[in-house]
Image 1 (cartoon, rainbow, N blue to C red):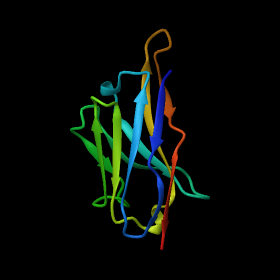
Image 2 (tube, helix red, strand yellow):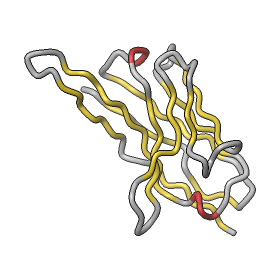
Image 3 (cartoon, rainbow, N blue to C red):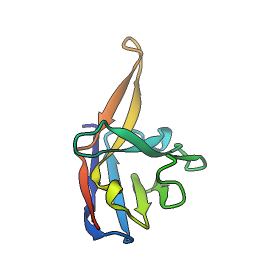
Length: 123
């Protein structure tokens, strides 16, 4: 079964840090880029960061650049999001995502999402 499982969200004070984990199973992990997204109450889901399959290339939204660091351990099938200098506006449910290629005859991409982990930053 294809699965992504996020963990290690929690409650932290402004200025604090958290490291989220996204554990993958059921697919060839090192063949795919992985993304982190978040959704705050009453807002649309937004992209936060992503990392290429090898880990060589990363992307960050402007709102988190310089504070968040994405990394991956392909031996452990896990992607991490280190979040430092957290702000109350970082409060959201954080999700990881992979778009998996499904071979012909389907020849399409399948979006896979985890269940999310809640990060709450108090002021």
